[in-house]
Image (cartoon, rainbow over all chains, first blue to last red; front, side, top):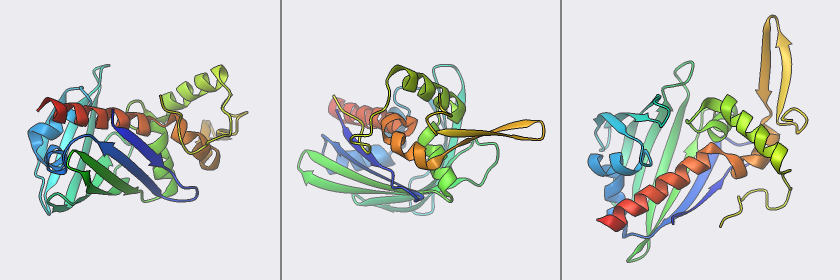
Length: 171
Length: 54
């Protein structure tokens, strides 16, 4: 299992992530940059429609994910920099927002830990703190309202303790 | 429940009811509950599986 840590600083527009993947750096980078590979993993098993995927400096991408409930979620962005086996800098926009113009700037850095292990360090920054918080709260599955409903249920079931606030317990 | 926990505030604006997520409180639980983290965990698991299979 890939081990992901997401850090969400207070009073900030940033989201930081670190993930360790059990695969060589070149393979991981390839999975980010080759359309047929990217389409395989990014939607986590859900069908993906690729309208456009031009992974190079100045290129752009536009995809739609089909969720289990049959809804389609569209995303688009531009590749600012694609540095082979090192770094990808791009924009990211969820087209299901009530209005356009809420765009994230994202950097992913690829570091070989050893021959079979790669660390990906991500830094996403939103245009406003509410955009950042909305992103964290809702992801894309359902909009924040359903997330908040789910959150409410969870809070009813198990009161949240204040220990270890920044990390979800892992199994 | 969410209101009591300080996660959201509700107010009326004309006919509309405005529910606002309170970012500060939300931050505390975000790492636990964020769809974002769930999605990305699933995504990276899928990535790893893809590379294992190849």
